Length: 220
Image (cartoon, rainbow, N blue to C red):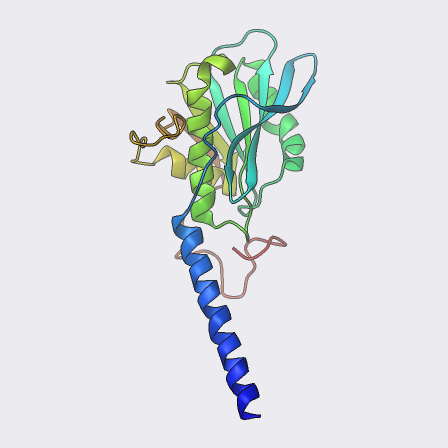
């Protein structure tokens, strides 16, 4: 029995150490793909726009994607970054829901829309979502010529957690990592306009005790 107890203690200590190392690695080892050429995975089109999906980065083996909606006529050369996020949970299927609400209206005005999908909770933390959002803006600016937009006139929008990410990117003081080997990371993540719909902003006074503010989403 004594040996069994010692064995269980050893296993517990080992698992605890592994979990701590994993948390430290996750918080300090954010990595992105340095392959910056366009890699379109799928393409569709309607009477008003073309839609293409591309990868804007990779982290921990996970592809980070965005859908690019380009107006077929009357393009104004301006880009809108739409963060698809609810409770910091992001999935491409939600993009379809946002087409009649946001994307169609932007297209009518000539904007190119970038519907950005970030890594979802609980696998990725809010801080990592923030890094994904900044990466998306940098990627768009780096490839502005390819997308037919002005790199110095990019706006960000979204609702709920998407609005929160828009505010974070819009108020970010950091511009770019000039020493990075990745040309995308050398680009600025600043945006020139922000419209955030009902974003969470005050996390010190957010709801009541035991009230699930995120509904059915996993715990953040």
